[in-house]
Amino acid sequence: MANKIPRVPVREQDPAIRATNFEEVCYGYNIEEATLEASRCLNCKNPRCVAACPVGIQIPHFIERLTAGDVSGAAEVISQDSSLPSICGRVCPQESQCEGACILGIKGEPVAIGKLERYVGDYRLENPAPESNTPRNGHKVAVVGSGPSGLACASDLAQMGYEVTVFEALHEVGGVLVYGIPEFRLPKKKVVAKEIDAVRRLGVKFETDVVVGRTVTVDSLLDEEGFDAVFIGSGAGLPRFMGIEGENLNGVLSANEFLTRANLMRAYDEEYDTPIYVGRRVVVVGGGNVAMDAVRTAKRLGAEATIVYRRSEKELPARVEEVHHAKQEGIEFRMLTNPTRVIGDDKGWVTGLNCVQMELGEPDESGRRSPVEVAGSDFTIECDVVIMALGTSPNPLIASTTDELETTRRGCIVADEEGRTSRRGVFAGGDTVTGAATVILAMGAGRKAAKAIDEYIRNK
Ligand SMILES: Cc1cc2nc3c(=O)[nH]c(=O)nc-3n(C[C@H](O)[C@H](O)[C@H](O)COP(=O)(O)OP(=O)(O)OC[C@H]3O[C@@H](n4cnc5c(N)ncnc54)[C@H](O)[C@@H]3O)c2cc1C
Image 1 (cartoon, rainbow, N blue to C red):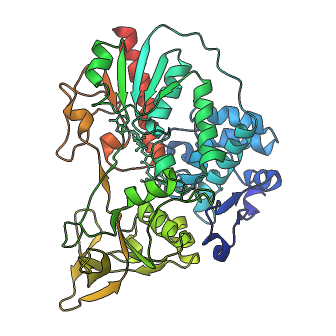
Image 2: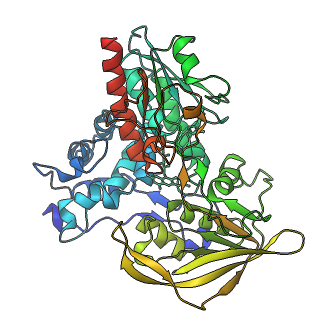
């Protein structure tokens, strides 16, 4: 019986070797492994996995095509709901979405939906679909930001016949996919650039080095440049700090800045002599995916690398797979530890991080037990660099330069389920609305907004 087959393990780079290079950790399935894993799917009548996927990919349907050996057909099924399967197959938190809902997971191991999606997505990258010849409908839509929300919105609108231009502040397209998530989890040339090329082939135009709010404004795009609607998918790239003493010392960085240097300035590429300082020992403060990416990047750049997190391991918000990989690579985890002060030398460079020990008290409003300081437990971790990975907020620039755009106290743009904002013709989605979240949620928001934009323009 299909469900008696154990989940097919995925091949990975040896931890001791990969901790010294930036090549991809996970090799993914080959055709035999993918077909065998696909054959485990029970093809449920009411597939819970589809309901648990924020973009509603027809999972059993694509897996059925794969089992039949029709990889191209499987890619066709996925492409109806997602333009970025190679990316999502690599970075989505499947354990809490599609795989978390898989019926096989109740008594055993769920189908490896993410690895199958990755296999199909990679096949599509090697065998690209032809350039789109959808006739243009004469209406123009501007998309601000080229992260997953912008890419998903732009793809859907281009397929409906709109002329879509994506305006991106940076010199490279892709948002967090290029400047945040490291090469060893998401290869830039092999995967991200190719998947974005597929979006280009749908007819989407990209203009880089355009900071909306400075170079142009949302108002001027609508009132002077002839765009019928604007989608804002500008993310949440503004880092938060702890507000503790010593945070302005040399050697204290936000995870965003550190990872941007590593990714966009190509510290991962041996052919580049990237100026990036890690010293002998790096401490990363935080416990999310961003913290794991920063600490594993620091390790690969040659530092001893430690995570400092104020709750216990059970509360770590990072994906289980990332924590597992980090441990395999020799990252030190100091749980129930809270920084109180960054210590520096007389030249202003970091020499250590003062911390206190914590213990878990009563649950807070999030349901997690709150960390409480243990009196008199001060100690110092010696280090040269401290990286803060404490979360991010949206940059206020766009909202502050656009008329009638309502935002929350935290600077998030207020939008309804379909992405409509308080300003007519302006839609928003992704991290700029929700605060830092996930690639697939951002894509889902972009897709919903595309539908709402189409409806808005048709009724205009
Ligand atoms: C290091 C890191 C690791 C992560 N790991 C994961 C993971 O494993 N799995 C997962 O699902 N999610 C992960 N996330 C979260 C995920 O990447 C984000 O939720 C997602 O990228 C949000 O998409 P977005 O389109 O809303 O914004 P972004 O990806 O942030 O893209 C926004 C884009 O808008 C551009 N922009 C901003 N302001 C302007 C302006 N004024 N004018 C023009 N352009 C502008 C930015 O330069 C950027 O390119 C991670 C995030 C980080 C930082």
